[in-house]
Image (cartoon, rainbow, N blue to C red; front, side, top):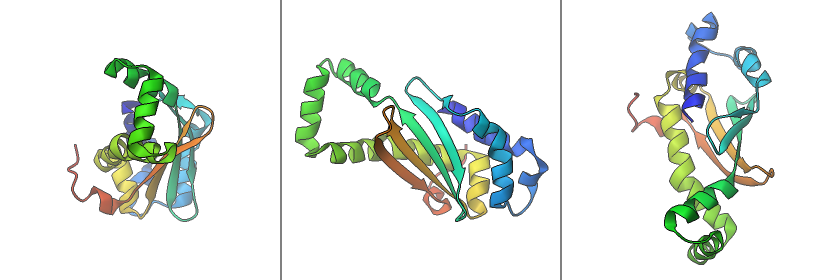
Length: 161
């Protein structure tokens, strides 16, 4: 995910538009166009950034594909149990796959997105200009897993790096 932070930070240096007091949706779409042409982009060993959209309501939507099977396999290996046992244990604990995915997202995904967005100058600048950042996570088969929305208010208790 460090690659994502570097990409967003680079936005400051692409165009003088980002030094203006107000960044418009149109300007942002134009600035993101070269990056969007390069998608999908592998961010780490399990995560790909598949699309970026700018909505007319000042929402920047990032869509990711995560190899959740690989995450489960890695977690099972780390716990020294089978993937079947990990799945059975998780379903007992959370009751359903949806609840398991929500807990996984709340524990691992949301804090990562919040920290990235709240400590990266480019994304902070976007949020200061009224944009919200919506991260939607899918598995590699296109199944919805989780989403997290980051606003400037969510960053109040995080110090920039």
